[in-house]
Amino acid sequence: MKNQRPDLNPLRQRAVALLLVMLAAGPLSAQEAEQSFELQPGMVVDRTVDRIYTMDERGGITALDMDTGKLVWHTEEAQKPLHVAEGLLIAQADPDEEENAMRIVALDKKSGALLFANSQPVPEGVRPAVTETLDGNFFTAVSAEDADAIVRWRFVERPLGGLPPQKRRSGLPRRAAAVAAAEDDQEEDESGAFRLNLSSGAMSVIDPAMLPKLPPPQAPGVRMATEKFRIAADFGGPQFLSADGQHIMVSDRRNGQRFNRYLLAIFDRDATPLGELPSATSVVPFFVSDSQIIFTAGPSVRREGGKLVAEGLQLRSADLKTGKPIWSRPIRDTKYRGPLPP
Image (cartoon, rainbow, N blue to C red; front, side):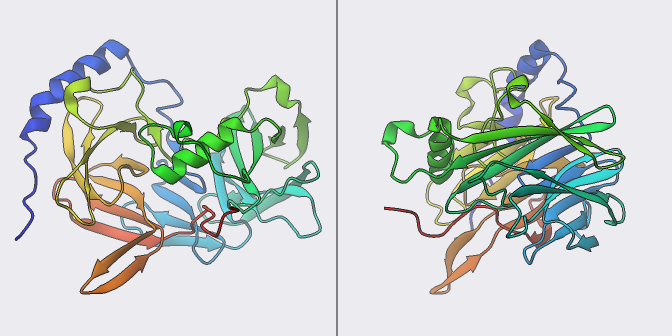
């Protein structure tokens, strides 16, 4: 029996509640209205040139056209996109085996050409890997300040044991919530910051005590909607912000579905329901571009025709009006998914 697509009328009937909440909250902050933003760690969106910079599944960085998903350029000079500023893509490269330092690379955002590279030493025991490892998670945040970029980093060691059930964060996927709670509890982690001149590539250390401590992400690319943007409480499931803060996703569990067990409803900031997305998970990192939703999905395993079908992490685009896929690209998974200590 064919699954029937849920009617959008209930969404329209409750859209007024969202409009009232947003009108009372006022305009979005400047940061939320930026033209470039991080979809999830290792994936930067630049609306000024309609590009998405991703970690290629085979290594290096790939620039994709936002509308078509087609390759624009690829480079092996760095592995992890961090930030866009002054016509540059600031990225992180894998550290050399013998170098205990974070390596930063600046690329021309339009062509991918290498402009400069430099390294900043980190404390002994900190491995500035571009992906999560068995030892822990090294994560960064970059912000522009005049002709410079401020780079903050933090290294959180992986806990050696399990977590009590009460440490789970409500609304987040189980594994992501457990890791986030563990990172919150770490007291002996390492952190640092430095200033990067965007013209010369020169670096200078900043006392991390002068800056807010970099918080661990709740989950890759996921932000719970705060009271400022939350739809009326009687609407239903958990609510999440898009990566650029311009849209809200409401997650509802669907009964009787074996794979796509969730229905994700997308709202515009003017309270217009844009469409729905069937999903195997309760939330996905996403943003909206014109009439398409761009999001990450996976990795996943499903049964088709008596066989198990495994699929890696994907960057996908779908038409919000019809729900039909537009394009899909495999991307590098930054999560450590190997065995954990007992």
